[in-house]
Figure 1 (cartoon, rainbow, N blue to C red):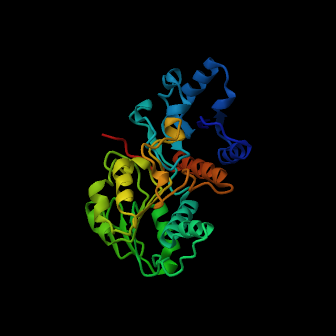
Figure 2 (figure 1 turned 120 degrees about the horizontal axis):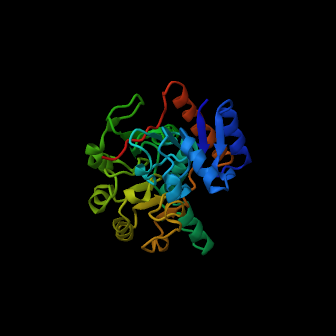
Figure 3 (figure 1 turned 45 degrees about the horizontal axis):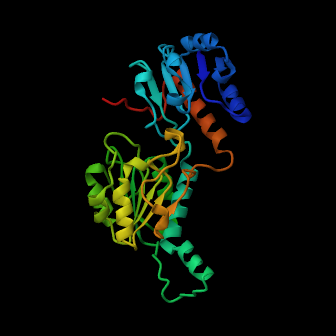
Length: 324
């Protein structure tokens, strides 16, 4: 019997889903431990941890009792919020790979379609009594080129959903290889090529030391003047000032942002340093690309099933590399 602890506060359905998956194991929910000593004793015993954001879920006293944790399964697909030093060097950590790919890919496609066809812009003109049919030229999607920087679960789903438009797909991943039918697959060394050739660029890669600030002035200038940049990854992959200035000076260029630089989940607030929402060529959403009915129960169950694999054969998905 393995000692499994859930450190975030699940709702009733999430709790039931976790309970079913770990039936027969020593499962506990940390929210049930209001006594500090009982909480510490439980953490001392914990081998496997299911968490959303361990950085926020544990205080300094808690962290002293995480030494026996052998595996951490995150509910989130991203892991940039994680402080690796909280856990022993031998502890393995997995992100919730692919759990939210379908709704996020739908969101990507919706953003591309809106910006390519400028639906909101022409809606607003109509609302002002301006019927500019012959001046309202939009971007054709069929036969265009879709560049996906981060060709993992989300990127592959986005490519699949865009396939009815006969788009050419230029992909970037860590290996430069894929079994998917794409026109090109490379690594970040090929970023300039993909940026220059693509009508639409989708960012769906992890934030780490190698991708922080990846898209700046130089990269934006390489993109097509009427290109569309979609970021459903992490805000910090794009340099904020560079993007704002590029949008302001290139009115035919568009950006769609779902992931922001300062967000409540990590920093406790939403904040932008430039007046993005004064620009007509920006489309924003509150990092809700994954938020569809039932997704959280699905995500929690997916994470728990992956953790169960660790207890079984150790064949888990989404293992996160520790920083050097």
